[in-house]
Image 1 (spheres, one colour):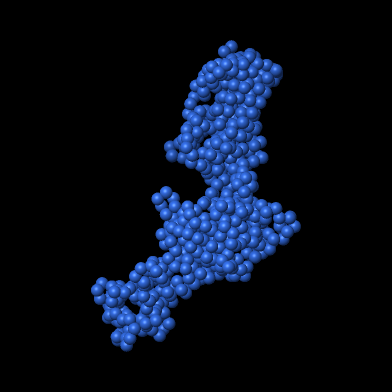
Image 2: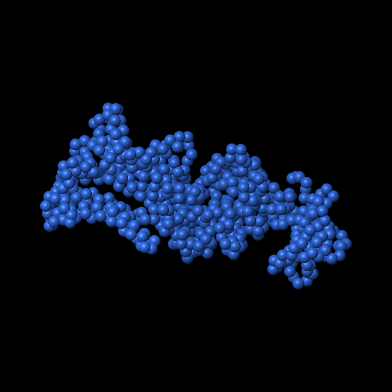
Length: 329
Length: 267
């Protein structure tokens, strides 16, 4: 059963449409990511689910119950904010205890659950610190513990990793996703970072201009994009006009060769630029008719290298070519 | 002369002009004769004895009572006003802001004359004295309290209240457990500003006093008409020290210094 369901959910500010009537079902225990560029409506959608502002139209169901008319404090949600929104006058442990205090949990149970939650995010030893005495990563963990300790039906994460530096961000991706699976908590995660979305999600809803372009598993989204927008937004993509169709090929699925390939998709071209990426080489090609293409070749020592100016064949196997539907289905 | 020594000279000059009169006043209060001589001739506490007599203590206590009440009332009024002005857009917001902060631009004297006429016009003449003074002081102290509270509200990250709501706090609970503790120092600072402003006001008070109900500032002004005596010097020192003492105590208790939101993690 869907733990969270959005039906024709819309939010307009005057003439501006932030969310244009979306439908979405999140299953129990599922990690659903709302992915899209800034201004696509993903954060607004999260705010609507949390109840921070009312929708212009549509319904929201949490565990089967309609919640549109409920204030945030009756929706049984946990939220982790981009800036963590920790209470600066309370210690880490008091921050975590806040939700339990509001629920009037008995003191003994409260202490045990706060300790458990802090241990869960490996901050058991820092409970007495104030937010300002914690590093960015530690604040993030406190925010996570604070949202989890109340055992919400739905956990909402609003770009929680975007304020961390790269290394920490990559660690926290794995850690949050692992925690989410261990606890089996239904989660909606908002991000503009496709890497985050691909690594962490069970399913991804790609949003654009207030609409959902596609919902699917990370491999669905990456390998079978439903629209040109999805194909371009996630990863990189070469597009070719081919007999009235649009053919899309990922740079890492294409090959370069000196001889014309026997079958599959191919084009003649010239190497314009070679970028050395360490783990891979990126060739930028100019094909006939002003078309351009990018090919990424793993730097495995086996692949031949081509110099700038070399005449080459660009090719891809049939199964690596994907046809973009002309219009949205 | 290097720019730094020039700057140093300017700073010293400023301090001399600021502190000089105070030092002189304090010294004069210990004169032996009835002359306001500086440096003082001889040493005596007779002027201090007079300053601490009922004639001066009465208006002093009156001023303290007035300033405390004015600070209390204007802070209580300022809280909802600051919330409304800092957080909400509503019709007439500009008008409320102008009315609240207006007395800041207006000479207190004008406010005083206006209030006097108003009290007479509505037939509330018998309220001239403490009640009229309280009303007037609240009017001129309100802008200080509203400003400081609004500033501390504006420095709160907006997500804190949403976070509280997501954790199960009703609006009232979020206000009580999150917002108020965080703007506490702003509220205290506003109250202190209001107190000092009320305690030191003379312009407005001049118009609203009646015999037996006058603040110390008005009493001092009245006494000056008969010339300056060392008694006045002693009274002035007392009037100067009282607000200073209050600010020092509040500073100790609430950390007025880090009034700006959680600058030292104290919140």
